[in-house]
Amino acid sequence: MSKMKTIRLADIAHARSGDKADWVDFGLFAWNAAGYEVLAREVTAERVRSHFEAWLPGQVDCWLLPNILAVKLVLRGALQGGGARNLRMDNLGKAMAGALLRMTIELSDEEWEICQAQPRVGWWPNDPLAAQ
Image 1 (tube, rainbow, N blue to C red):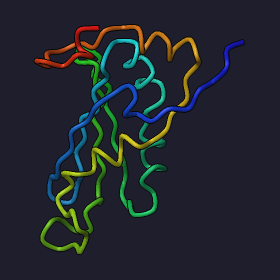
Image 2 (cartoon, helix red, strand yellow; image 1 turned 30 degrees about the horizontal axis):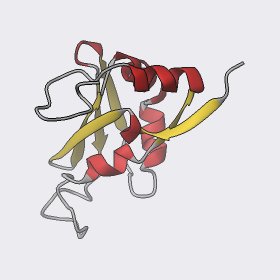
Image 3 (tube, rainbow, N blue to C red; image 1 turned 180 degrees about the vertical axis):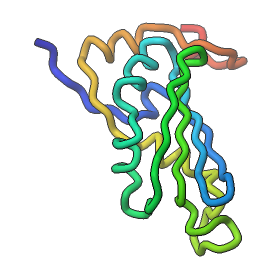
Image 4 (spheres, rainbow, N blue to C red; image 1 turned 135 degrees about the vertical axis):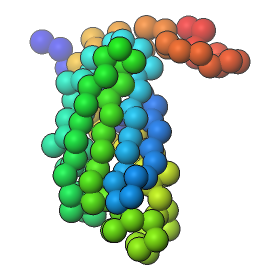
């Protein structure tokens, strides 16, 4: 039986975030197909809601996008009424991708090795990791 490993989403994915009125909208993108398999299993609306529960009164919607190795997430009611109404430092949700990428997930040692061994997909000029 394989041992399990705890990692941050940042170890197998990158993300973008922004605001839509009182929502935070995320795109979470796996670096490769092996990472996407882990994301599809581990990143659920319930897990993301739990990760942000300290300040999130609304619901979380989650869509799997296997064609682009991505997960789309929407956190409703996340901005205390919207950019013009809340008192947080980043009131527009642009920096929320960093908070999502700190969420921890579990995978087996074998899955971790496969995620590390597969090359990154996409186009990143001058990125030494993309050429692996």
